[in-house]
Image (tube, rainbow, N blue to C red; front, side):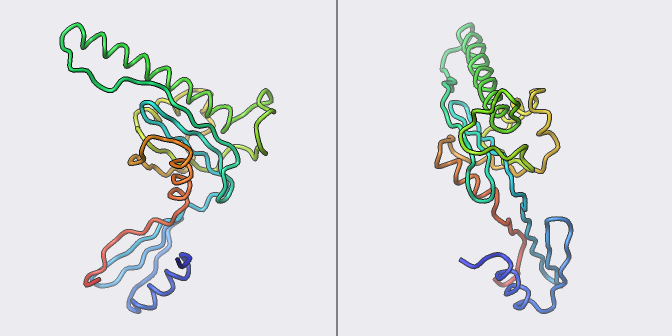
Length: 192
């Protein structure tokens, strides 16, 4: 597979009437009847936070490799057919299980992504606070994790969101890193 700069150069050569416009990490080619934009995510140190009911993965990546990570499972019930009082009891139990999941993931994120002196025993080499985040899974859950005061240093970092990820495990974490670093191309080219 060609690297992005080569692909973009070929694309521009195939569309000689296109005007190239750069805005931050996005480059756009515009011509009379089409437009294509490509957005890069050029951050070296990336924090990954993937969470779904029942599973999570937190990692720190430098370049294309994971420096450190933690993957795990937590049970959160999905549904019940019961109604009335049983339904309310189920909803309370599910909310409690989700809160335990969020608390566990918050602690892993704190330890791996914003560690303090007490975390000196981290596996591998720690490189500092990430420059950007890749978030995946359930938006409500990752928002709850990032709202924790201990993760305040991650607020405002550039983000890539991957809500379509399956239940997090080590393979999904590696795939999320690859997708997070990929150049995202979108637009329309009539006749192609």
